[in-house]
Length: 145
Image 1 (tube, rainbow, N blue to C red):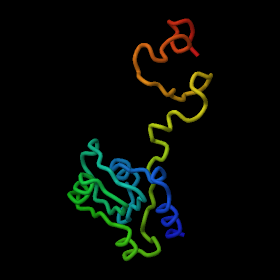
Image 2: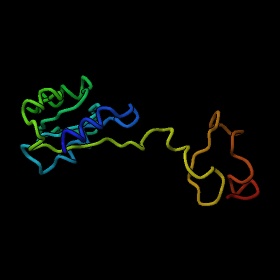
Image 3: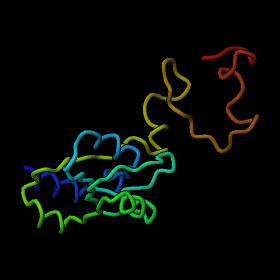
Image 4: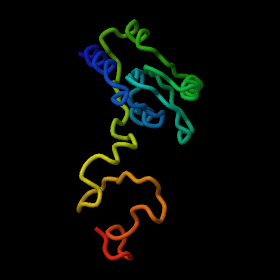
């Protein structure tokens, strides 16, 4: 089952293999000592995380700074071939995913901008005074939807 899920995720589009930050990784792995975090996607560094815990992480890619901070904390960065040698059936691993819907373009999907109860962002050329800031957008300009 584990290998089936990994195979499926490896064959996904780039959009479906979102990056996972070290901050999120550390939070999700809290209390799971001795387990290997498996991320089908890149692992990125996070400046907000001052003390990186000791982690064993298997991922498709690591940013240079993320790899450095994991190794500095006494952890290890694995690739999927090394993971296959160590735990062929996925025993002692935690399968994690990055936020798929965190892309900027996802803000523009959904109910049309301007209709009631919609929090969809309109596609605007610029964020200046003249662009989508008139009637219907501000109470001071007639009315606000």
